[in-house]
Image 1 (cartoon, rainbow, N blue to C red):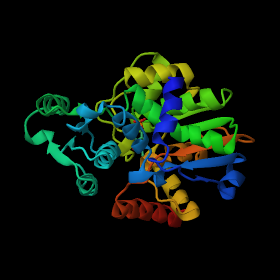
Image 2 (image 1 turned 60 degrees about the vertical axis):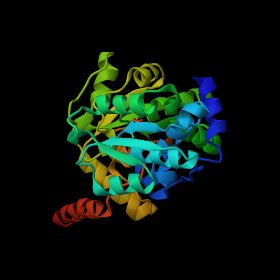
Image 3 (image 1 turned 180 degrees about the vertical axis):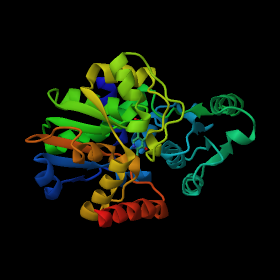
Length: 323
Ligand SMILES: *Cc1c(COP(=O)(O)O)cnc(C)c1O
């Protein structure tokens, strides 16, 4: 896996943005930590997922790749695969539920992908993606459970360590585990003493449970506003790396995500999505003790409907007035 990370570093260079690292004195004063934010919300298509998609699609043999790629996702992975396919000039088919938010459908179509709704053809998602792959010769690009997706995702934390040097702690949002296992791999290479901690939404704590029980636990439909972390379980590839290299997994409730979004937007002028601030919320809410430590915070994405964000923040403003 280390060799894969080193190769991915070269491969994504010049294609993925090298996203900025930001600091916040206000947060440092509140927590007693010295924080560095890796802003993948400013990555191409608005989330770190571009990195894994690029790293994976770039390695498909050219003659096979030319036939196109297929992915199932209602979120950022769809947009990442669509954008990378556009860059390679190949077709992309994205399998989505018909209830996917209009903004995500528009963004995915905007990158030139064809959208197929699985709930309108009476087939399950995986079955449909497999059939499309077989019939049209499309290569399936999985969202997280693949070594090259992990290696691509790892390049974000790799850049963070390269830029800020050693960290005591690195906090990372967790869904299916591609970003967390990749970040832990990067820490292993750049700063083995750094403790890497995954942060999940409270209602989707399958990762934390799996971490404790030692076997893959599932949650059928995680009810959380962190839509990028509504995955039902980790995958065998990501779970194995997480078990080996991750120090702990903690959870935060949705209310803390809204508070963290407000902080990122008001104080840091960063447009973020709920899943993107999981790590920040863990720090702000004191779920992770960080006093006196150098802490890396992965801000994983910034794609959200602005009207929805306004509603969440308005609810928070009402709470503040009541207090
Ligand atoms: C997909 C996603 C995650 C979770 O990543 P995994 O690799 O599935 O753990 C976190 N944040 C954002 C913004 C995402 O799009």
